[in-house]
Structure formats: structure tokens, C-alpha cells
Amino acid sequence: MNNEQRNAHVRRQILSALLEMLKTQEIDEISVISLVKKAGVGRASFYRSYESPADVLRQEEERLMGEWEGQFENDSSASFNAVLISLLNFYRAHGSFYQALYRAHLEDTVMYTIVDSFPIDEDIPNADAYRQSSLAFMIYGWIHEWIRRGMQESGEELVRMIEQSQKNRR
Image (cartoon, rainbow, N blue to C red; front, top):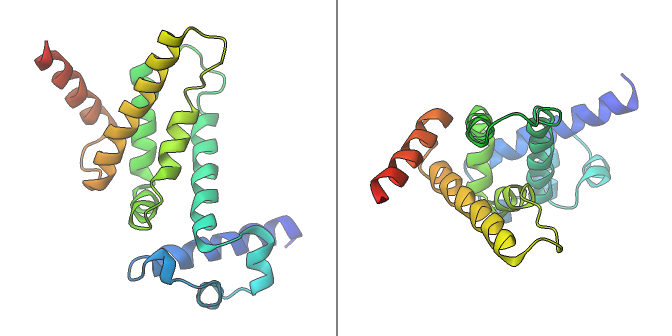
């Protein structure tokens, strides 16, 4: 096993142990010492990649979002609904991780990921910037509540519910 493979293995062990511990403990109660003991790795291995147990979750969320974004990098033809459905289904496929993130009170990482995916250039008109920001936070609101409620609906079902609620408001 080369260094890269060994580091990936250690990171997986740490993440797995942390997710298991989060089922019974709050993130603030989990020490690095107890985490590395459960993961079966050394403290130096932990600190080579992370600063804290919360950092483990933040980095995994970034990795997952990079994986999802890779699906759309070269597809500018995808409709907004198709991208949203894909994102929701991706979150649902990784539901145990995202629910652990929420149990650890780190849902802000999801918010930042969504908001950052709606880049607002300083040169665009204010109305466009406000519209982009509103859309980003509206999507985060939907996703936040959906994850909080256990991700019961598929991406398609959630988007249909949202569309229906918009029609009912008219």
C-alpha cells in the first residue's frame, strides 16, 4: 500500500469511527484521543489531515460536493430542475452522512456549499445579485428542512412539491 492509499484508508477509518460515535455523542463530546482510538489510528495520522472532529465532517462534505459537481462540470445543457433533482438525490444517497452533519450542528457547511454554487460577481446589477442570493437561500431552506425531516421524499418528489406550492400561491 503506497502513502496515498494509506492516507485514504486512515481518513476512511476516522470518518467511519466519527459517524459511529455521533450516533450516541455530541460532536463537542468527542475528543481526538477517543476518535483515533475507535478508528484504530494514531493521533499524528489524525492531525496530518484534520484540526478537529468537526473538520473531518467539513472535509467530507467538501469531498462529496466535489464528487457531485463533477457530474455537471461539462454539461451546461442541464436544466435547473435536473440539477436540483440530482443534488437532492445525491444528498439522499449519502443521507446517513448528511443527517450526522445535522446532528453535529454543522448544517452551515451545507448552506455554504449551496450559496457558494451561486457565485455573485461584484459587477452584476444589484437586482440580479439579490435574485441569485434569494434563490440560493431558498434552496438551502428547502434542503435544510428536508434533511431535518429525514429526507423522506426523493429529489423528484420534493421538486414536484415545491412546484405545486408555487402554483397554489398564484
